[in-house]
Length: 515
Image (cartoon, rainbow, N blue to C red; front, side, top):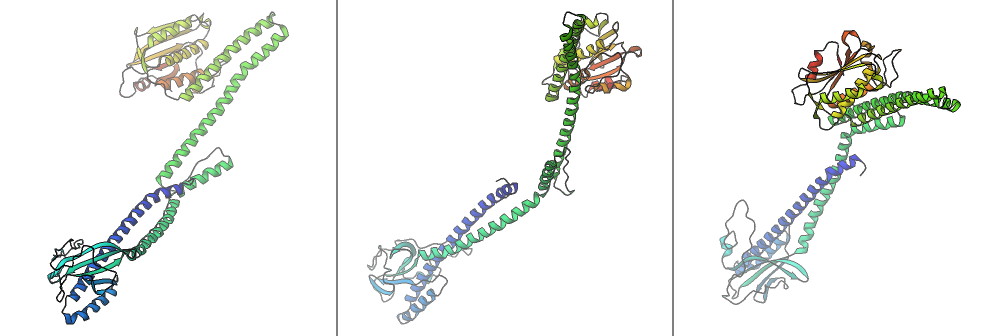
């Protein structure tokens, strides 16, 4: 079933049909039990009536017996098969309805041989005498009326039998009334067919009603489907689903979730287009430099001054391209992984920072610089990822060196402020204008400056993304004395603290912008 309406209708109708079939089966069983009990009561009552008619005085017997038979043949379930035998002598009725095989016509034969017929008690709980309501009916009875099954003339039959003594007869008299079971079954089947027909009619009506109700209930979802189909045919990139104010809550939740997803998708596509455009622009510059200097090498050769200069510029362009590709890969990985870094662990922030500073002191770009290191304690622990923290501090320290004066000063500090582990990297270079301190966190944005070295504009966005993944906060501020830049990283404490103390620290630092 491809239709949701059909699936819901089937899901509702299958248990309903199961209940209907169960109810129909119970109804048919009750009809069978009721008709069988009623027919058996009629047989026993017929035997009793014939017995009372025969038990009358000899003068009245010939008048009462035809009258009793006439009454029995005109009831709702007519009884037309009866017999009255004395021994093997037929007194009245049908000859083939012979006495039972255990009938003993000998006077004074031991009786009874069968329990009298019994039926479920009614609410009156009538007391019976040998199976009879009236005690006078039991006078002379040596075998109370009982029921048995037999086969006569190839047909199954139900027989009620009574044996009693009668005035004027020397041997016990057998009174029997028979009812063919196929007549009962035909009568029952009429009711069964009526029950089945009513059940089928109700089921068909229920299917139509449920299908219509489900179609009406799914109307808002059908509207959403039509809107999505129309937007697909129009190939629009901006799609928002709308519903009526009285739409059900489930449909409104679905539309809201879809609209939010579309908004996020549009932002992602816009960011991807911008990222691709900026990345292609950034990659084009070093590639153009390589192409130009390859042409110079081909024209002048590597042994000429022009060739030597070209080789040097090619190396610098390749280094720039390698650094740019590495940063692009880092950003792509962070975008893919989101904020999931796994379990954070405590690490020695002082040791990590010392190792980074030591590796940068011998760097050619820092040969004439004064790079200093300060720490509040020999060991300051922080909570986070050691590798990510190393990359953050390295990026900020590299920026402080690259964008500083050749003979400038860079100071790295590992501090504890308000119980929080903090790293500060301060330089005395040209600095960043206050208007650009928020923009530099955007990808590919580079603060304007005539003497600024080439760069990709990805270092600081990478630092911010790494900080977000660890719960660390990064900010840029003006350096001491109004010159340079001071970058601050506030890490989390190894011990879990209520709230976020980093917010308290930044709130106490003047002119600091946390990202």
